[in-house]
Image 1: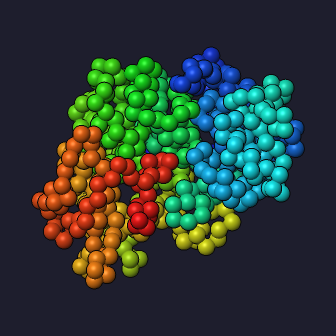
Image 2: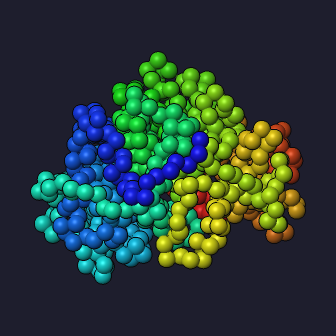
Length: 513
């Protein structure tokens, strides 16, 4: 499958909304916590009303609007309404601090903020101190008198007559990176990117269809969740389940058994927790045909156990905020657990060594991507833009090897690699070995200096409930599987590992312990 050609005049929101008017009465979104629903016809009308309301409030095209909302059916109304008006939605992580929100509001120079009522307290210390912020619009509950109500704005507005006159190459929306290695970076995406990922991965790899019901544990404000729960289902007219709460194993299994989605998008740490749940339901209680995993490489043991128990594959893949969604993935019927699969059709991948030369099969190097959904730039950050977006190629920062069949195997982050005794060691390889022990739930490996100031692996291990294990047992387990120099010299048992909101392990926090 090749990147699709789009007309010179193209609005991403108008495309996704208009293609679903032929089944306007079909349910587009269900709030899986409260049971409320929104049909495709209602979504079309409300998005156009919100677009009209924004413009009436003096929010001009190409202005930025920060969107910090829980996953409810109003989230796609706001996101798509902004794009219809030519306004740039800045989708924001709901779990951040006031300090982080302050940075993003100032960096983006957002003219308006749309925020769920429950999240408003994190913003209140900032209000009145931001020179560019003109409007605060409150969703999901009545607004305080000092702010505007999203529902009232929508109800009072006439639908926008015509979408903004945008092109495939116009700025469409921003996503801020997680900022795990510094200040968050405003990643700028274009109107063409949403439908490219929907057709290349959503339809080309997942085979998503209008008959599917989907649920993504990853929230809409993440690049992964945005494709999973908005772009992909809307591209074909499927129904999406949203959860405006934490995706605990109990809540996820409730959704999987009650609403019976056919596609479930998860992350490795969640799949591990689901498989460790002693109350997990039987296969017959679910209706899954395929699952996906991204965010971190999926340990092979978790994938194999899930597939054996629930009769459907987990398609492990990798995407990024910069590429918007998954560009490398396993495929149904061709899964090799322990690998991240093969290039998604429409994307070209290469592995580059430290000398800048393309690696041969089996050689470890940095994964780079050439594809139609690469971000335009990092806003206000020229140096990091040049470092990441090298012409047609985007640098992932991930180490990989490729085999003769075109399957890629993760080797850790470029900045996580350890040099032990002059030889590079992938922390992920050691983690994967530890994870094969039946008593282990999670593991993370970082470098630590010994008494001679030489770097050696240290493992942080979370055991399954009721299990006990010695440090030596972990060391011997790894030695039995990997080269001797790779075993962890220290093992620390912990109750939990530090993670980002996407479920990625924050190894930099472990390195600073």
